[in-house]
Length: 418
Image 1: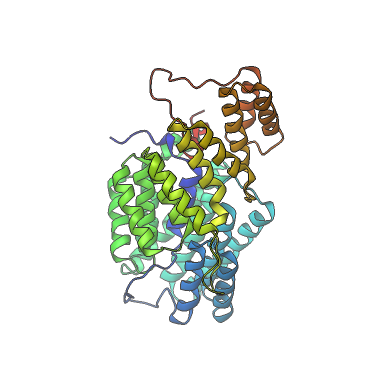
Image 2 (image 1 turned 135 degrees about the horizontal axis):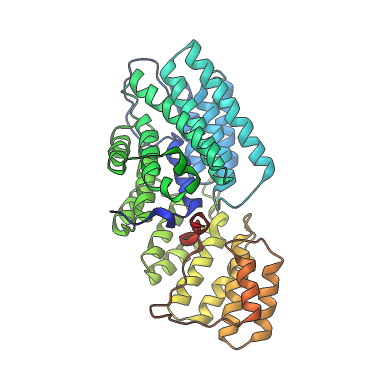
């Protein structure tokens, strides 16, 4: 038995699901198929370059390459699907809670555009290819509904998307990439479904072991989803507490994408979950150094700064857990000062600084921090906690065990239990 999956951080879960469904390129030899090639050779260079830019969080260059792919083959659903995933990355690269209504509208429009292109392709050219991207668009839309807490819509989008993925494998079993969608659905139906009470009415069932068979097949034989399958397996290992296995997975991803700030963050997150505080600090400093470097060429942008607030926050938590309150304060101040698009880390940094001031018996400074939290983005019960701290000063207590400051990501979906 695995542990109850209600502790899945919903933001990381959704990002992992979309990454896993995205069919972004990873180095692999082309596989022959019984019908058309689902990944047209004339689009290979642009889609591969666009995907690499996405892993680097270089959205502008990704947009340029994907737009060129759409221009070359406006009829083919692959380029439209890649643009759908680009929009999703823009929405969720740092936090699922970073809401942008304009991007959300654009995501919905692009999902419809992708579905129409896929439907037309299935009717006029190749059914397997059409169903592949139609199912992908529905899967991404389903996880968007998860983000919106619209569980019934999420269920029906996911179920319909799964039906199309099954059709792909019946029509052309050599499109191994489709196994990723199968594995993803089976895994979350087996683990997440019971945590969502509203979905229990639909009698969701999944098979965890079968899910891993699909995922490993996609990782070993997929043409374009090997890295995504590896990422998904890392995510599952993290959720289930198999942290040594998660570490091996993320090291492989870093070898494949050494210039990706997102993969570098995943390594820091893995070390944090392992409570390897000194290594978290070392990797955080390496991350900060990379954020300050000049991009090596005009074709690359340095995007490490996009995640720097999150990295500094977790470095502060690591120092706090080591009992180094002054050093922790320095990192939390850096997190507050970062001009991150997602202001949630600024909120949490202020909250932690208020708690440190309480520990220093500087109650007046603590109250200033807590009151500042009330004017910032309400994230992870930040305002509720700030109000509690205003009433009662923070005290670091063991509560019968080891006192450890957890990452907010470890508590992200606690509201699913309500």
